[in-house]
Image (cartoon, rainbow, N blue to C red; front, side, top):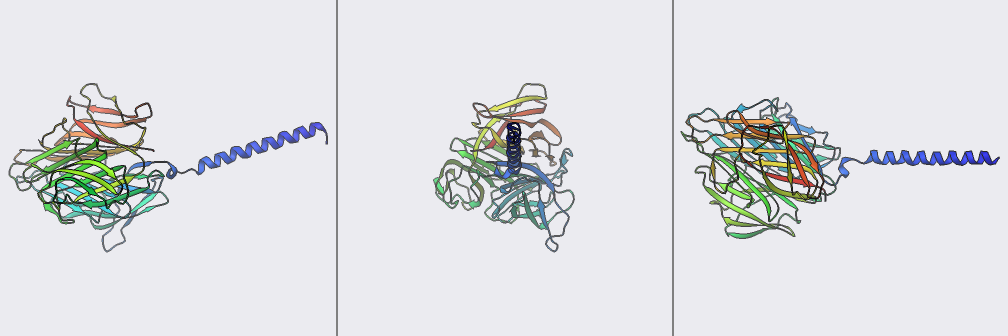
Length: 445
C-alpha cells in the first residue's frame, strides 16, 4: 500500500467517524422530549365530547400536551365558543388536580332577572363541577382519570353536559423540576393566629387556593362566591374574591383583592368580610397560615394545590394608563425567566376595602398559547346585568358588563435578564384606569 493510499484511507476513516458523531448528536437532540424540561407548561383548550353520562363510556383524552402532566388547572365559562364575543349570563368554573385528588368550585348569576338568581357549588371529587347558568343544577361534571406518559391527560364525565358547545381551557404543568404535588382541603379551625397544615407531606414552593364559603362539598347553595389565592413566600401572595347575593330585587354584588393575604372570604348575602388569612411560610410537611379573621363557619372548606419544585413568583402590577394600543408593557422583578404565567384580577384599582360590582378575570400563557376568561355581574340594578367572555387568544381581559372591553393583552415574551421579566402587548386600552392584576410566574430551578 502506497503512502498516498494510506493517507486517503486515514482521511476516509476520519470523515466516517465525524459523520457518525454528527449523526449521533443529531439523534440525541431529537430524542430529548419536552418532559425532560425542568418545568414544562402547556396552555391549551378542548371542547367536551358527546356522551350520555353515566350510562355511556365518557372518557375523554386530551393529547398534544408534549409531556406527562404532574399538575392540572381547568377553567371554563362552559357554553361559550372561544372568541365569540360577550354573552349574557355569568358562569365560572375552576378546578385543579394532582392526578389523584380533584377539587373544583363554580359560581353563577342569571342575566335579565327582576330578582337576582345566583348560586355556587364546591366539589372534592371533580376537577370540574359547574352549575347551569339559570339554575342550581349541575351542567358539567368531570373527574381527572389519569396523567399519561404519552403527553396527554384523561378526564371522565360523570354527570351533566358533555356535548357540543362546552369549551374548557387548561394549564398543564410537568417536567423534572416538579417532584411533588398535593391537592387537598383545609379548614381554619377555631383558633385565630398561626395554624400549621402538615398533611401536605412535603415542603412546597408554591400554593394555590380556591374557596366558595361552603362547609359542604357537592351541595349547591344560593348566592354566588368564587375566591382564589396564591403564595410563593410570606411577602409574595395575593387573593381575590367576587360575590353576588341571591333573591334581591336590586342586585347586590361585591369584589375584593389583596396582595397581603392568601385567603379573603366574603359573606355573599351581605358582601362583608367573612374570613382573612395571611401566608406565613412553607414548612417541612406543608405550610403555615395566619388567620386574622376566622370564618363564621370554622369548618368552611378551602381547597389547595401545593407544588414542590420549580421557581415561582407571586406579584402584582397595574394596567397602563397611557399609550395607544398596541403597545408593550414590561413587568420586571420576577427574578428568573418565566416558562409560564397566570394572571388574575378583580378589574379595579388597588384597594384595601371591599368594592361593589362582581368582576373577575383569569388567564394563562405558556409563552406561545394564551387563554383567558372574564365574568361580570353589575351591582345596584333592578334587572340583573351579567356577562361573560371566553378568550383563547389573550392572557387577560378586563371588561364591564354587558359588552365593553376596557383593556386586553396578550403575552409578547418571557425574558431572561438581570431581574427576570415578562412582556405583555396591550392590544386594547380604552380607558386610563390603573386596574391591579395579580401575576404568578413559573420557571425552572
